[in-house]
Amino acid sequence: MTEFEQWDIVTGIGLTALGVAAGRALETERPDRLVSDPYADAFLAAADAPVSVPRRLADTEPLSAAARAMWTSMAAYLGVRSLFFDRFLMTATAGGITQVVVAAAGLDARAFRLEWPPGTELFEIDQPRVLEFKDDVLDRLGARPRCGRHVVPIDLRDDWPAALEDAGFDRGRAAVWLAEGLLPFLTAAAERLLFDRVSRLSAPGSRLAAEHLAPSVRAIVGEPEYRAATRQLGVDLVDLWHFDDKEDPCRPLTSAGWDVRTVPAYEVAAAYRRELHGPMGRTVAHSRFLTAER
Ligand SMILES: C[S@@+](CC[C@H](N)C(=O)[O-])C[C@H]1O[C@@H](n2cnc3c(N)ncnc32)[C@H](O)[C@@H]1O
Image 1 (cartoon, rainbow, N blue to C red):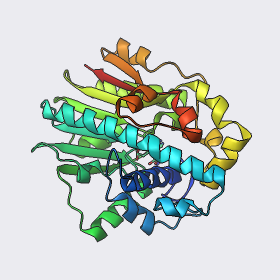
Image 2: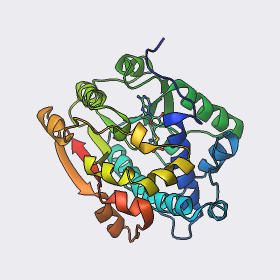
Image 3: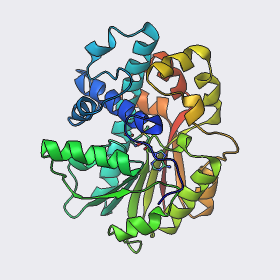
């Protein structure tokens, strides 16, 4: 039994997984889409969310201008983020890494939507009720993963390395790790523990990618209009995100033997010819993508 708070797909942090699935559903509808996630809409249809979560761009029209701007700008950013990490994972597995670990997988459907090399084993870690909801929907759809898929239903502050190894992860072989849309939800201690554990489980040749938000983003998410708009999405990021005492993750990773690189998210967006406006456009200035190799 865990000592940590449990959530499902329509409460607290769990609801943010539904929110990003909505972003991917809206992105999928764009004629200039960067990624296509055919599973996102099924998750939205199945969830009994306490707030109006749009499944289509047209669903944002009745919302307040602020909430509409929040959804559409979030979707535009998620297209960029998803494509960047899709490419990172596909390059790592094409290069011979056969183990993929998605920390805080939420409703990430990469196991189903990407064309993985034969022999790829993908592990999804998230809270039990989040993964239960996801698997119910995927089972009902008859969705088939395009790799070996293993769910690891556990809190990332619990002993997930043991659960991961029980699920078949082999620390003797290189792995590629992803932490997308996760780090702000962890306290400084939990973030440090995550990177320590990932490093301990990473054989030479392993790779890692993470989305990192600088603590300076706090000024924006704390603005009254921004807070009001995110509350209409059912969450208050000021309460859910932690920045106190956080160090730049490049430091512990470099000390643990990782060769770390970072790229600002807006540079990636420019390379993909995607303009980012609206509220998320402003937070993106504080976002960067971190990649590392050991
Ligand atoms: C914004 S969602 C991102 C989900 C997914 N990575 C994506 O981009 O679609 C945040 C996810 O982090 C998960 N999460 C946050 N803290 C966690 C923890 N301590 N243990 C397990 N999962 C956690 C939530 O359950 C949720 O699925």
